Image 1 (tube, rainbow, N blue to C red):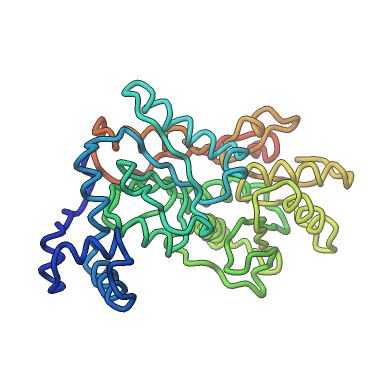
Image 2 (cartoon, one colour):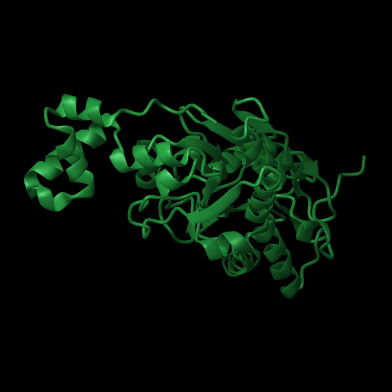
Length: 352
């Protein structure tokens, strides 16, 4: 499998370019005590500029050929990712495809506490990355020139699998605005550079080009502009984690303000379900007193007491597609998968 993988430099080519022997380059990676600190650092920096990951990775790859191990890198802590139903569906999809050819997956977080890959780049055939890691971590992966497939973000020179988050959010908001709510609020997720609960009044949005939550916000705003429905910055909030605690507290705050919203657009089903619980605890009825929409299409939202109106993400299909492309079972191309609106009772269809 050779998904857009750059040709690897040889030890001899690198040594010639730097102007030292092959043994000196090898020592810089494998026997640092044989060189002065200054010479070793100079060689390593030169290798990095050329995109050479070291002779150990090259020789080990030649010896082992295919390891039949794929690293699946998650953008959050492992405990969070395994409890998140959307991430679970992605992992299930990957596993389903890899089971038959007896490939193994190695699940790793992208957090910076994992200093260096510690030989991981030589052991695995490539990476499926779910959600964008930090730029430093991404640069580290690209440096080792392994095949990479990106899910829920785009990566130059790699295959990416996404939905059109902006369009899906626009479709959801347009459907909800048919109820003509006088006031609308948005509970977003990890949209800002500040890692805390923030309103758009005093927050700095992340780069819209590669942040799916910012794309969802833009979709909501597209629908509001089209239908002449104003959502003030003071009614748009970003919470730092997709957990019940943050979502519930945010919803309670919004529902107790003098300018209580009649519609809350939520950027995940978890947020929406927590908002419904907050509304219930405050004595409001959904959808009679407050309309709520989600985003993801998890089973819990489908089977809740008041079924959610939401965007149904093809999360399992994302994982399957990534694995199929890796195995050459599917054409190597960027994919935008369909994510339809699923209408529930939390924001029902307007009767005409």
